[in-house]
Image 1 (cartoon, helix red, strand yellow):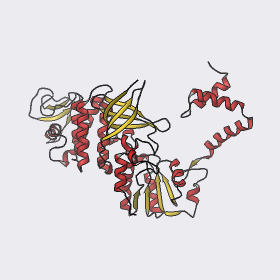
Image 2: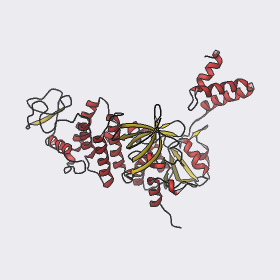
Image 3: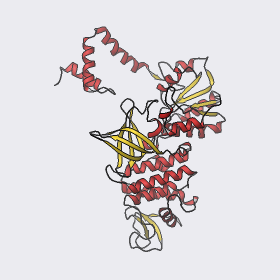
Image 4: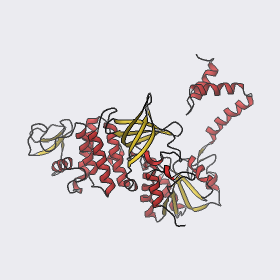
Length: 237
Length: 198
């Protein structure tokens, strides 16, 4: 049993015992970390609001047999503004939900961590790009190794006539490779998805409101197909 | 080792309660075995009567033993202000402050997309209906200062403001008797934003 140092972004927490919470964090070095914050639900807890979701914190943990116990918390970045806007909170909620599903315990996750950190910073700065969550889903898929093929056909590598999307084949398909289960994409959607996936999260391409709903729908269903799990209401909103 | 059936049965039941482990359950069971029979009967009856008599208030969804709770029946309470809380237990906490003389509305939880709880699972529709029926002019949102509680408050503000009602939120700040040195950034930041003229 020893003390150890770690840092991470709080994904969520759930009540544990009388006044404690189990906090689930995404650490760049350790992947998903679960730790007990004793007494955090009491108003006079010394942790206060430090362990609320989305906070990037520096931790001192006391290693236990099953769960570690948090003994000290220091906030690195609190993202106070995104918490005051319904749309931004819901977007951040969708992001942490996805990473909570894909992140594994004791598996370094630098890319996932950086993706979340950049995305939260973007949300903190101002009203978000309307397809920020869609871009996040595409990038999260890439981080876990199932990034969809969007610039070329997933079947033959052709770069033209990409009008279908197959969840099983892992991306867009040209007219020759199309399979019965592949969904038809509206004009321009392939290019829009590819642009969202390729651009940095804080410099996404110009918004196209007419394609937003379809872009989110395809990205969400693609990720759900490969994670074999339905994503919650936040991702659907 | 197992105890004789009647004792073991009680131990098993007690151990299912929150925060009660096997050892505590055993201690409680043997305590009940040794108290006066009348005391044990009173305990059993109070559990049964609570379960059969308690229901939710038709108006505010507080726990009560009649159609409306004592707060909704009390004509001295100010009907123009309404305090919205997550759970019935929260009403007792607010009442203890003796600072609030209006009525309550219990939502039954808070919005949590991760757990699949959206506005439709909470008593939002009932709240809107009450605001219109009871001519409420101010709604005080007293949900927990957590991400879920704050999200619920933001949603309520968006839902209720178009009705022409004033929507306020309980202030966040430093706990009385606390030490500034131990305040976290988020709480202290909110305390600064919500500072008051003296």
